[in-house]
Length: 261
Image 1 (tube, rainbow, N blue to C red):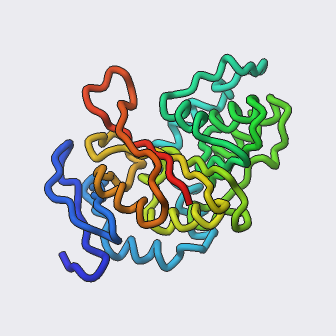
Image 2: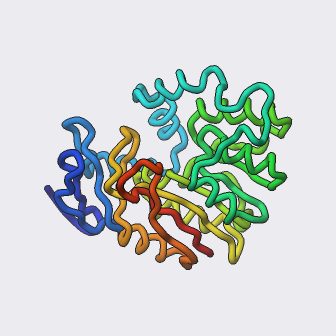
């Protein structure tokens, strides 16, 4: 494979076996094979050329035929994650969500808010919290949930990881959990998170370790040292550790962190 500059790549070759991990854009990660097709330089360069082209990403994300969105639609179309009678105690947070809740303060942004579970919980706990996502399906789910808890739909906005729709220095805390592995250019995303954080603000996040190869939508898998190196180039690390995503797991396969601007 042709290699030059920051575009050196490393590929996930077969299940649970890492052939090699090379440094790319200052981090260590692997890009997974999808069937027999690799994500190659041409694809990455095309994405980079259209980095701030909303129409391009809208087509890529919201007109996708990926089975993961079909599964998600079936799962959520009844609005089952929060019942019609929304009550705070019915929202059960995961370990990483509890961690984020404990670390968050001030004005909060949930970047990549997904189905709005954590966002709604924070609002119900009287936190000043806003959400951003780019997937139309999930944005509709979140807006419906916000209606049910009698909160404003303006609490959630459509926005890209590389183009967060808020001004500089807007938030005391940015939460972004299990999002870095879905985006081709994590360095760009981290710079944007730093932009919207106030001086001294916190970024609380999580990402899967490379030993958790379990989702068709994951693009990048991180090593602990590689992710630590990447984040430390933008933030001051207050805390960073590995945890089990589920109690039944034999290995720690999530990295969680709190860092400051």
